[in-house]
Image (cartoon, rainbow, N blue to C red):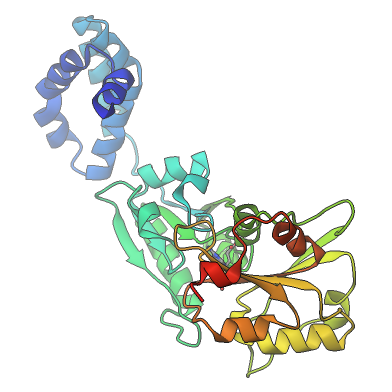
Length: 331
Ligand code: SAH
């Protein structure tokens, strides 16, 4: 089947095109010494008119066209670098956008952090340089300023940089700061959205974030601890008929639950914790504000974990999918 797939996607006259290209290989190598320029040149050859002509068997026209193209490349000023801030989605590689996928295959450099999975990284061009700038909670290994400077330097060196971020770059991803730094440095930047963890986890857990009968709003907040406390607008978060999604909140769960209850949410309000959402390591713990703390104590959550609160969480449970926490966790 794999062979059939490959054969189907390749033109039958590919051998002819390869032999044609081979004749010019040395000449192109000598003319365009920068590998990046060479790669762009060959991309243009194979994707453009030269390729079409060679595949069609018109070698004379193909040769003429190739020489014209090579002349154009030779006199071209070195291209300016650029940074693409790309959302890598919540984990499942199939949730990458087509644009993210295309950029990954063209990037000279990938700058990525901890939330980006190996499967997604492996979709990039094999010879792309990989730069890890991940952070861990309470253990910031690369300060944001340094990441910004690095992106600027890579782009100024003429590289096409893909800055991969888990989920969406603009949802708790510090994408705003990176864009600001790049714009200030005069570097071209493009932002490519990704499926944010809230959307990915909601889909895989079967939790509709809004619902005509249960939730007219959905709020995304960060439960990041600052000096040991979570500073949020609890009054707003405890309103009825809304869904609250808390990013980075697993560490602060006891505080979050206590505050929501003290600001008026019934202790019976459903809450779910979803770890490694959309991946094959996904785990869910579903309970109520009254029970969740106890449930969480029976397990260790090490992956990225999202917390969802609201009546809609109960819908998924009611539907009786694999939400039986006890059996899933083997408890
Ligand atoms: N920009 C990202 C969020 C980065 S903040 C986005 O749009 O999704 C990091 C937090 O996101 C984690 O602490 C966790 O709360 C959440 N998160 C990211 N990926 C997740 C996943 N696959 N499953 C559950 N939570 C996830």
